[in-house]
Image 1 (cartoon, one colour):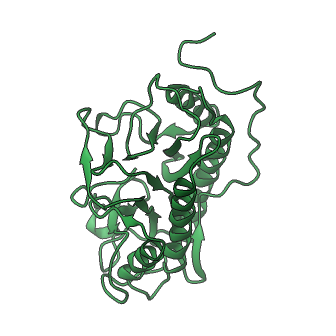
Image 2 (tube, one colour):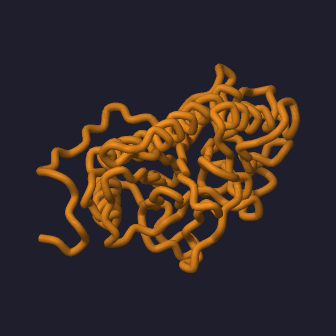
Length: 285
């Protein structure tokens, strides 16, 4: 879940590195990886549920049951009053759209963002999915956004600078002809969902705070096919592109280690449950 540039949360000063992030030990990073594995596996399940005619509220029900059945607590539900386990942002919606009875349609793209708390540690992850056949523009937007995520992750190295991440993301996105959203950012992750530092998806290489091993961040490019400006909806949550253009969102929780970046939101040994067909609308029997 992406905070605005003014919503970052900081932990106790005694736990912070010299520049603010709360540094994690190798054991703590392993514990966060367990949360990340659970969340990534949940995303894998949700990817199989995305289809025309499926209500976003039904996807939310699947996600909550999956996480709770495995000891996880949805990190988003109740956070600052947010009412659901996942966010489901369709087409020109950038982030934070609340799941509902609205059904997906063929040709849509839907960005699913979710967080989990497992044994006190948070993981945060997002992916944008096509619904059936999508336009060439939508496909290129998703591919460029995902590519920019991995460019940003590759730049998250101990001894580097925070601006290296944003510069890598922005360069990839703008070379593809799209725009990074500038008013929403990535963030540190740990015991809390939003810790220092904020991680913009734009910037100048070599600028910003120095990155230290033990820092864990959510790298999350939010990319519009049109301009970078966004607007907040009447529900107080849904953020959409101001010009109505398509938007995509990809995110991983990443630990900066002495050996390079380690993606923590990776599905592994967990086995998704078998299901008999796609998720049903809320209340269906």
